[in-house]
Image (cartoon, rainbow, N blue to C red; front, side):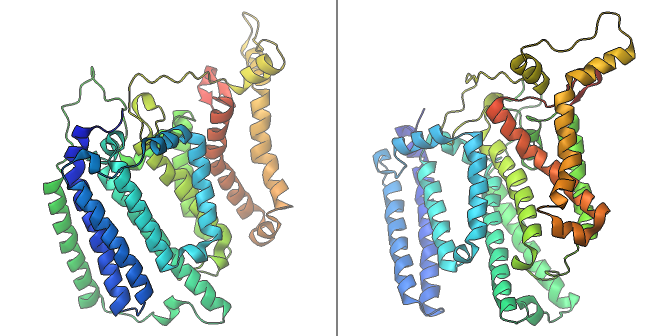
Length: 441
């Protein structure tokens, strides 16, 4: 199901205003570059982009569905065919790695402005597809789209400040925060600024509420549940984790470990540099750990759950119709089943009828021995191995207790991507499965 003429006629007005807004944005940027920054070359470039955007706006407002700019059907089909949880996750990790390695290139204002324009144009061209627009323009999802762009902007701003500070520190100069640390009075300076922001945000929310009605549905009913049934956007990452873990681990243990890890950070951190100012070069390990945990293991899961998880919690491409009849044949198997039945071609160890509790426990331990050995080696043997290899410097500076807490917190954090990869590649359901006591991992 792709875009049709009726839909394009309905969305033409919105796209016309959308492209006109991009044109105005680039026009203002061109004016600032010409008059304020003294960069006539870039001013001409963005003026030309503004003209192109006005042409796209005129085509969208022409009243003819055939003239509404859109992505070719072949491009949409290619994106749908390449879409999948594996490529999505690997792509986000690769993107984060590229942004880190080439951060000095991406923090340049003109590079960032170009990327923003490309993102906005691709968004506009994609909005001409009915399936894409039905997801992105859903009132529940509109704020999330805005949050994605805001998150990208503030991440770029912080990274740019960190790159500037790293260059200054390399030249023997203090960071920018040390030069602009003039204290101001809470009253009236700070309170006055906060009051203006409060009034501006209140006005913006009022206009938002008028233009975009709240997506209220009919009263809840036990005989009719939405498909898909999704949690609020800030819990969609947690809901995605429930696909790979038992509820006790995904809903209780992992969130508790996140809270505990955040509280433990000040006590585990031995690096005194980078306090009170932005820096990446002085805190690479901390920066990469946070970026991986926040972006890859949380933000990307929220985006995946919002825009790519459809009926029956199936994975859909961005331009794919959300049909409730899509069926994916999956045979998820526990590790004991893979080991005893698949690898050794033997039945699962089972206690004889009438066996006592100790005998039954022994057979359970035998059945789960592969998983217990793997998990034990991962949590018990791997930290000391890392302490004498990759994290030798960390172990020397942190000591045994702080190092073991840090190492186990990191390893537990990595259980999420490891389990996701095992589920996608081997259809592995649980590494340890003890239904007798409702313990699955």
